[in-house]
Image (cartoon, rainbow, N blue to C red; front, top):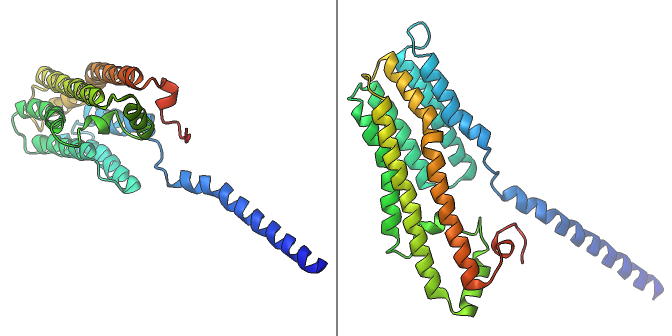
Length: 263
């Protein structure tokens, strides 16, 4: 009898140890499934810095030549976009639009079309995203939830419970609608700035060394001239959303930000 009890204790101990090991391993397994965070420096290098240097410094006939410089420069952002798609295994409409934008730039250059098409193309992509953002307000899937109000950034389930508890769900829908206008506005601002920048800088005929240099300069200036003001507007939309979430739910910023904790 004593031996049986001892054997049971040993079995229970082993089972408990195995369970502890499985539980300890599970967070690692879970974290392994999460997509890696994007490296900002790597992003800037492949999408802006390297293509810019190639277009500005290697377009001469003694180096790559005008056409091959465009092909090699565009290969970096295209490869980056494909790599991101393969790693994350997830279709992203904005990555797809960026991919199309790169192909259009290369096509305009290689086909030696009028440089005004560069300005039109530069304005069309963010303008289209802004328009789709406005249209999505009338659908059950407003794009503001993709940009700002999603479970990657916020604890949306906790916020939804608090809104229901305080009876402020209708007011929050108005908040999301206003935030959508701000997000769309940031893309329309980007569209206008893209057009102006391309119109001012890209004036030479495609297929020439001067055109490639202008294209490289436009790419280099697009980050401070366009990304900075657009980011400011987007941050304003985020502040507006967070402030109203606090007002309607009485939850603090620390309570709604998704830091990976359950509470």
